[in-house]
Image (cartoon, rainbow, N blue to C red):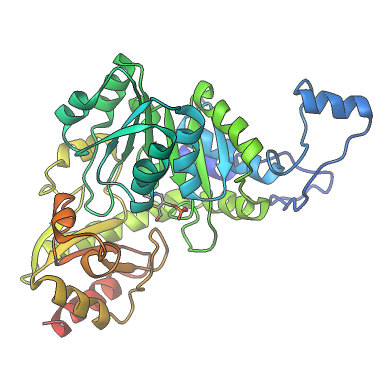
Amino acid sequence: MSDSKPHFETIAIRAKMNQTAEKEHSTPLFLTSSFTFDSAEEGAGIFSGELAGNLYSRFSNPNTDEFINKLCLLEDCEMGVAVASGMQSVYLPMAALLQQGDHIVSSSAIFGNSLYIIKNILTKNGIEYTLVDVDDNAQWEAAIRPNTKMFYVESPSNPTLKLADLEFLGNLSKKHDIIFTIDNCFATPYLQQPSKFGADIVMHSATKYIDGQGRVLGGAILGKEKYVKPCYDFNRRTGASLSPFNAWILSKSLETLALRMEKHCENALALAKHLENHPEIEKVIYPHLPSHPQYELAKKQMLHGGGLVGCELKGGKERGARFLNALKMHSLTANLGDTRSIATHSASTTHSKVSTEDQLKVGITPGFLRFSVGLEHIDDIIKDIDNAIIASK
Ligand SMILES: Cc1ncc(COP(=O)(O)O)c(C=O)c1O
């Protein structure tokens, strides 16, 4: 047998903390705020970092360590920090690595709260920004200034599933000494490992596919030690830490990530193909459909097309809202990446406060629907959608 690295599935299941003296098979839960020392000398050694050991669960706990160490292996990253939510994973690298006078270039098609941080919180600290179209390489290059310190991107983007060219951004950021950061929560490390294309920091809302069952919030920052260590130090002091309980859930969830993503993607592709032939659907967006404008890129950087499908229902905003009300099985909820299928009509819900003009700028047309395709039987998913299309006419 070769001694090459184990496969993704094997790491996700077998990477775990050391067994305790109880010889348990499944990782136990360490619900404790602090840890004891056998002597003053041992305490001093752990505090100074000369000795390994846990001190206090704000910055070290066996459950959070297991979760983050496993995720580092899966993302092929040197170091990680587990944090309380996906939003904290977005904010922490910006807070820890940027300072007054710096400039960040971000894709405009990002989660609303991430955009809020860039536009409203970073600017308060004297950090400038430029927004670019995620799929326009020339815009990224043109936006670079002498004080540009960071690129921020989501790929695929929310909700219109456009892709960033990760290899291009990896090379560009290296050339200009810019920290390339990416929110990888839509793809997960199973479908896409941005560090292989030159990303310096990879963030996750673990709340999404990593949990995968809509139970807990969590976030992770992974990447090169020189960038992640300042994030760890910042979080150690400011304390937006992941709880051991959530880390325990999330580490166990990782064990089934590969299986779940295979099925999410299989169902999503089947739904996308079905909708593409539907007379009431104007267009379908799915990265692994040949009709996606970046199909070749999607094939290059993503193992499968992901669990999200976008489409344009004929009949505009009013029909979109009627469609949502006519669904019987799909959940109407502000989450994605769950075992349960979720439907969103962006114009009447998530983006209702954004002007129609701004919605159109990021590709949200009045009848745009986003499906987070779950793990129910595909026939039931399609039936629910088809029935709601008819009922909303
Ligand atoms: C792309 C993306 N990033 C980050 C977040 C924030 O994650 P959390 O809700 O875990 O804070 C979300 C949440 O919806 C998201 O869609």
